[in-house]
Length: 277
Image 1 (tube, rainbow, N blue to C red):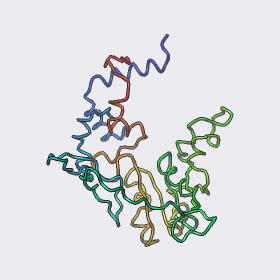
Image 2: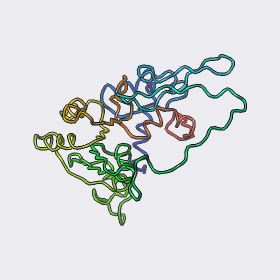
Image 3: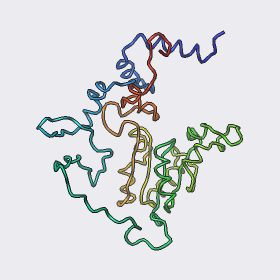
Image 4: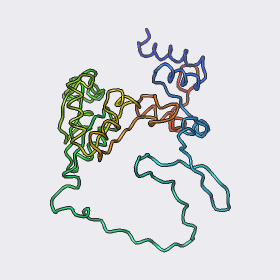
């Protein structure tokens, strides 16, 4: 008798074998299904989403040959990052003086570097909460905003305390959200929106990690935040960025790894017949 998971995997393999991976990917984007192709390097170089986001820069190698290299890792609205410059061409460059490692300018002895910084963390699952946690661990006051419908996906991810599952027993969730304060809000209600706007007016930095447009649809997007708090910095992080034809893809790290080409060079070979080769 087949295990249910084995049967499910066999059925999935049978279905996936009928279609090219790009067709399945496009269908997923159209229908809101989270599915990602295991991309090759050739796929990555020709990915229309990266082209639409101007994600490549031209780089000249010694000898004059030009190649494309990946661009910047984030897109700040006020202070844009720039393409990397050329590598040093001197065969024996003088070593640059390394800056002394020490406290930040103006830091007082015994204080953590982000003390006094106020952060509103509307993000969920992994990247956003972990990023906000770094600020919390280094002295910032971070208020984590959650909802119970649905609860943060990490609350249902193990390992669990004493091996017993529960929304308040996940080590993964606890690890990503230590050092923070917390509040539960219904962001679709008038009362929840009111408190959320108070947080946006209060904070120096706001994090959110939903699919693009979600915060704006809730009436809590950057334009609203900026009107409430002209000096606010809003960090929006999602799998595929805020622009481009694949921006609506919601997913996790393994979807990003597949699309980025990591699994094609590190994963197990797939025979195409429902078995690992």
